[in-house]
Image 1 (cartoon, rainbow, N blue to C red):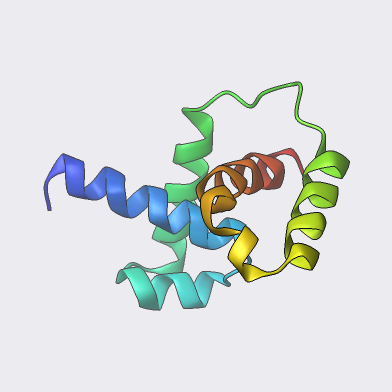
Image 2 (tube, rainbow, N blue to C red; image 1 turned 120 degrees about the vertical axis):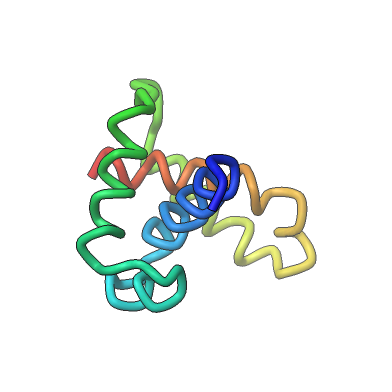
Length: 92
């Protein structure tokens, strides 16, 4: 696995954890051990500063509003919301 492929896998793994997947599910999906998955997530977050201006309540309210608006309205917001969700999880 190249460094680029590893970074891509690690980002997807971190996003999967932020979406609520269990360590066991992540390990199976990304062909790593649970311990390795935990280390990947820990390392990923240690290398990225968390924005202090994140408002978890605003993110939740925005996401709920978009869900109520219907799936067709979620399209363009998915990536941005996923990134916010990942930062939100790190704050918890």
